[in-house]
Image (cartoon, rainbow, N blue to C red; front, side, top):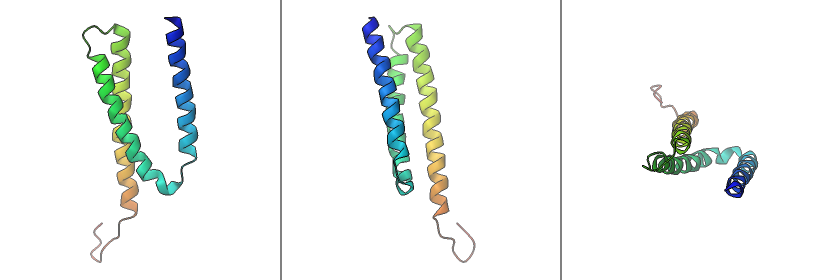
Length: 100
């Protein structure tokens, strides 16, 4: 049991480190497509967390961590869409009547 937890923690930290390195190397021109991809990955995380938290035989720890995962991923999705929308508004042309 202990080795499974240790392996999971190791994979988590390795994925976090590699993810940060990948994001820091991305060109600003690719930021919007990367945000869209991140939103899709977060949506998959929400589905997985709902399945884990809603399982009948789940322990209280699994339910709590599932709730935290759903909350964090949902905030990430909403914020990602808001940021992407704001970035895209910067590139819209204004017509002669002043509408965006």
